[in-house]
Image (cartoon, rainbow, N blue to C red; front, side, top):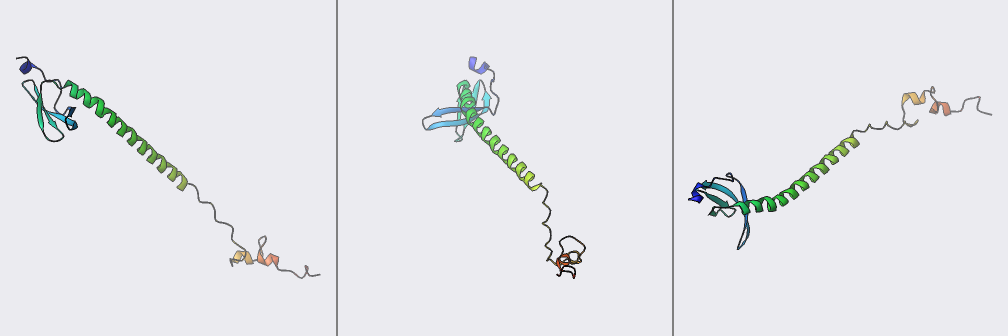
Length: 131
């Protein structure tokens, strides 16, 4: 018998896709014996076939497009995340600007000593400044 002598072309686990009365179903090759493929469908039903080439092609074409879209979206999301992390790290990695100069009125000893420019002691009138 030609069916019994047929060799297994598709390994166990091969995805298949087929349209039934209630819509499209995804299945998987779960067995092969005497030239018959056992396919278990997404609703847990089991069907036996001698030729599953068209169902395998439909799975590769139809599911492949959806899988490609998911992969493209995932790559875009991951890329955006990496860019965001890099930008944040660069922003937070900038050197902190030096603090503003202290006001001469802040009470620090060096500001009232009269030894630096524009210190409070330098601004006091001396006897030579009085006319």
